[in-house]
Image (tube, rainbow, N blue to C red):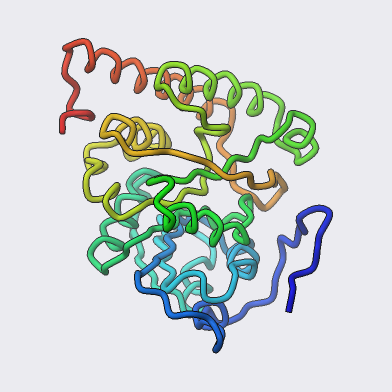
Length: 276
């Protein structure tokens, strides 16, 4: 059956609970995949949006879903187990970067050939997962990032706060110029990695805070991996997670600092982040 032709992506942040086998088990007529795909969800208080995030995952596009809970105070862990996800609990909050380190260790240890990282807060359209995976499978890119900002109008109509839009545009422009890239959004929580990227990028050296993401991409560029992106719609609403202005400012400063360290490394002032 052909998919319905939509004019705009649906927004359904509330969804009934279901077992994950509904999306993991491929349809009977689907060709067998020769490689393993694991989706990792770094989670903190994601009970209200977890089911909605996973409900849009196309059937059979991934083989396993791991949720790493970072000391949530709501029912995230209970719900994830009820849905049949693989769950790892951090008894105490280790930070966003610390959460991802656990995600990627697990994925590598369990034989993932491609790893999808997506925030379980329904900000990112999980229907795009197989399309991002396809770019990796075709050998076009080694890293694919979801680009939330196709136009100013769309980003702001999607309720992205004005200061976040402005900061994102400034930082992304700076990073593209400084790093020789052409990404539309360096700060997305939807990313797909080839296994080799996770094996070679020294992510264990990175921060446990939000700047982990920036450090990871700069390290990937330093190692010569190919980065690309695909458009995903912007979704900001009450249930979606978002860092406040103060933490956003700290993140922005840390991002500029990371890129500056890379340039200093290239000029001879060695940084442990980028030593191969």
